[in-house]
Image 1 (cartoon, rainbow, N blue to C red):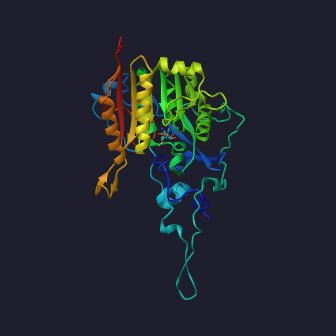
Image 2 (image 1 turned 180 degrees about the vertical axis):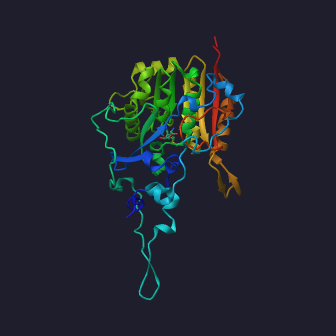
Image 3 (image 1 turned 30 degrees about the vertical axis):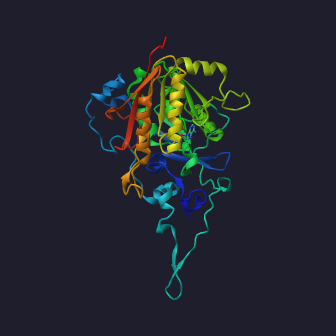
Length: 393
Ligand SMILES: C[S@@+](CC[C@H](N)C(=O)[O-])C[C@H]1O[C@@H](n2cnc3c(N)ncnc32)[C@H](O)[C@@H]1O
């Protein structure tokens, strides 16, 4: 029985699988344990390319607009994962593979007729997931918060994540936008050095971790104790990435659907009063990767941006990565990306607002060098929103 068969119970038609995991060679992805709610947890390794393989590093993020496109290496040359066969992909086959005819066993009976082995009906209640650990190639010692048992070079970042989740759990996967945003930050360290940064919708925390390799402090925020715990464990796993520069990552709950920050000390990921004060006084950069995929959440995300900036008495730069996922829609009778249209609508509304902060948005040219391995497709975009503050007094 293949790995994919065993995983059926958790991979249903309404699950989504990130291209980052789908395209990653299996050797870079190890299943290690089950999380609190029985989802299989994998560890993926992402190589950070050494400086001599990264072209024309710039210290000024704005200068990337003027630069021409870098000479792109082939995927193999830049170490990008090459598409694997469905067999190699195994359980990572994703939503479409779950419906593929190869999955069904076709047998002939004595009359030569095909006998179709019927699948059991799928169950999609998340509590019913009962996957089986197929291998534990590189066990992690849960006691070892420092990840000291992992003999890895400092240019490899290791991220715990799940695969093929329901939409409500998408933060437990790594999305290409997270790597694009991290790439930009690594290409312009001068703009982030020593800064206090807030990440919204941080998911597994990969971008926050890489940002903390240059920034002073990163408030890494999202919702859901499960996700936030995974994020915190990723930060422990990658201390060697952040420690040399003294960067700190603080995992906290920040829900775009709730106006106030949770300061209830009984809550695991709540904010202390000092942290709230630090956030409002010192955050000069907000980052967010792949947070635009649901119109209600996009509206809430932009409301949160506005409310946060309104609490600052200073200027702030906001970087948002987005992946334009094109689909044919019956409503428009054409291929389009409704989430992207909503993004532009919200951007426009933000720029039309009057107040102590004025907002201006522009797309960052995708010419900054690539130092992490992923497929930088043209649908990936990075946007910069400047929130300029004028003292009303
Ligand atoms: C597609 S994932 C992106 C995760 C990560 N930034 C990445 O690119 O790998 C979207 C993220 O938005 C978060 N999110 C969804 N609704 C949210 C809310 N109401 N408040 C805060 N974060 C939310 C999800 O939990 C998830 O982590």
